[in-house]
Length: 573
Image (cartoon, rainbow, N blue to C red):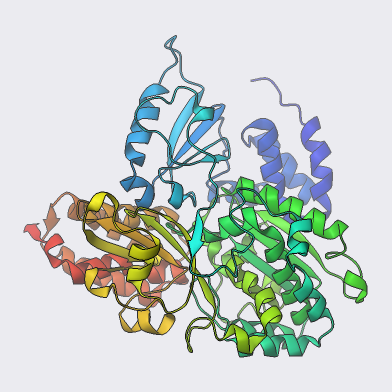
């Protein structure tokens, strides 16, 4: 094997060397872009330059799915394997491409390999795939895929709804420019915030009733207040854009079409908390969003909205973009911190909580993309006017990701409190091809199922909770009467088994056992006692897992067992 030329690597490592370990994952991304994979000499050079032991460099490489230690073919095609893409024909796409690229016409090994991938965040464009980091949707699976670069459509947001507060600048099929954003009133809320006391901003956000839109629904103002009052400097703000829940794509649309709104919300959060440094953590598969956000940050910095003495206020703030490398667990906030610090994305024990011991063990306020996009709106309208949107206990607008067997899948902005029926039938156009509704999966892979009897439940935290349904991050996946829900459960169970980080035993073992039993459910070969085993596994993971992944990994399966017990018939001793 010829000796690798490390000259190109050494030239780029000079940029990451001052960061030390926190520069590890960005440096590995850059190194892999040069060599196509991360062989031992490359890993050793990266570790030596950043001061990270080689064993720990390998630990990081092996943890993240997008890093390779062995050579890979020139082109890797990832076919989305989530439920929305599966029912749209992803399996046919996978089989067609696998057959077509198994060998070149000459009979030699193909330079293209095809792999299944977890949700790519393109559910409204199902079936979807990613080619060399480029995402494509609505892939033709009828056999005309010879030129892989030309397969499918470039995905743009499909945006509709009853209101357009958060999506007002979306729908142009391109990113809103800084000039357009400012012309539409953008950064006026930041100007207002810089003239207020930080405590007054926090009070306004608390009065608005805004809670996190990423799934946990923790009151945003309380989180900011905790970080602001915590001792210790520096403080940090983090935007969690590691959107990897199957069925979720709202953050992708906002980043790709209205990036400045996210930045404005993050800067206001930083000023309120007393932070001077921010991080935007973007999932590795969102290469387009990463590039768009990078350009937006550069434009905002040049215009004086980021940097020293912002708008003459005396306040300094800068932000760094961080691209993850393929790990669902990094959507958990403490696992995200570990990744930014250059480590494997293992969740931390709580307490202590991020507001006191977050990024680099310093006080940190972390919010997801949709949450931050609400912040400029709150300061623009005022908390009282903001609370007039939605319901008393669930104020404000909400983005719902509608996909599956509906006529018009897409991102819908509505006020909290509309009935499920309105979203699916009035906005989404009803069930495709005139078929009947069988089930609705709320909350993504970690969600629960609803049926026709639930169509008039209002979509608010309080009403969904009363109906036993999680709002989650706003995922609504629809299945018609022809779909085999056992196959859906199998995909969800496989997702969790593959994405469990392995740090805690209940989740590591529980997700594997759950997957094994759902395989038997899908093939109608359940063993005696499998129902009891599934329930025991579910309760153990829920009660004993370290983080939300394991705590919710059995939610959909348990929901299905309650609604459709006939699917779980034990037929073998």
